[in-house]
Length: 227
Image 1 (cartoon, rainbow, N blue to C red):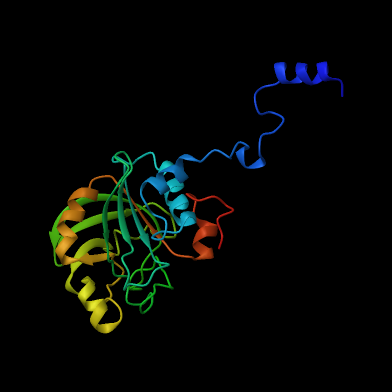
Image 2 (tube, one colour):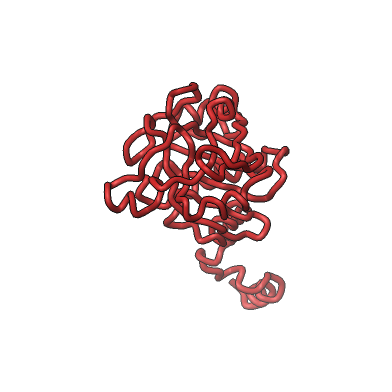
């Protein structure tokens, strides 16, 4: 190639265009959900696909009054912390703690779910938190199930957030699993009041398990969300 053509190429082409290494090519943009996931330090705690479903469903709930998302991850055993409260506006994790599931949902893992009265099973899906009150289980929080046929009997079943001695991590350490509720997401009594005071009155709570029946029926998740 004549020298004057090479000179023209170097003069008019952008710097490094001819010799830019493949590794310097533009990378795909990180989504807002991925960015938040990384910022919260959730890698190794919550699977990204689960967080993405929780975040996506949250965006579809226009009736929420708080930018607070509670995620209960029933893919984890009751011996692990699996209850996460996230302030999405401040982009901050507020709580990570244990939570019990229904006595007929499983032993250490929750694997069976129901919306049926007296089933004593947990119900999956999205909820809005309502008012707090003091009842037979002490300081408690009303939950409004948003998914018809999945968790919309939560009120009539008295499925609420409450504290319980059997949900303390010391119980899991001594007997290999937490005690179980009648379907309520029961928290350690030591943190129950503090958690309820943060999430009450219009925040979103999402209970997740790797359950294809739920994933196929939920109106808050993408139809492609199967496991």
